[in-house]
Image (tube, rainbow, N blue to C red; front, side, top):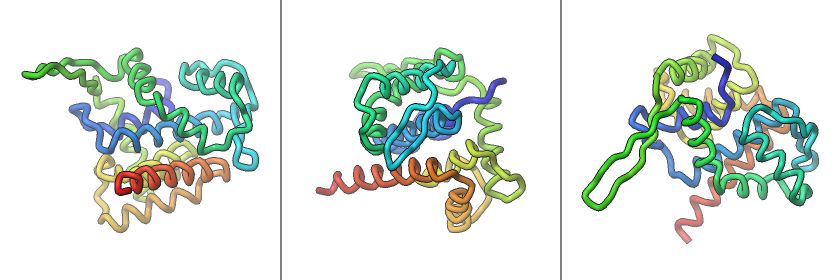
Length: 211
């Protein structure tokens, strides 16, 4: 099976086997937006220069969401800063990612009926997809295998979003958080900058609740 994007991997780990997210929807959307940009940076379709996103290759990516983001850069003001782009993409990245995974048959849709209406829930079709993603992170965090760039970015985003419980790693919480922070050493400066922006935006969103 072709490897999923970082965005899709993060989405799957952020939900349990009943389709319930393990984090506030707004924070997860920011994380997914950052992951989508990292996908394009790692594939050399985009670059970061002085805190701004720059398009490097306008060719189709074979990923609808990646193509959508590149089109945004082509038609909108490209001098916008990174944090502006993350916030803009986050506005509907969750629904787009859900739709993409459903179209691929990786998640399935069920309708939960209640007294006051109904709710659509999306659940993984097969743990054979989620299992290898979790195993990759497990080996990396246990120090048994050096992660590739995408795997290291996934671990860092999990740490930023505080989704450690999704990994089912037998490490004490303090050691697990330290191992997740260690993944920063595997990133290029551009990926580090995106992850830092995601963390800052999530922190600002959390503080805004108490204002």
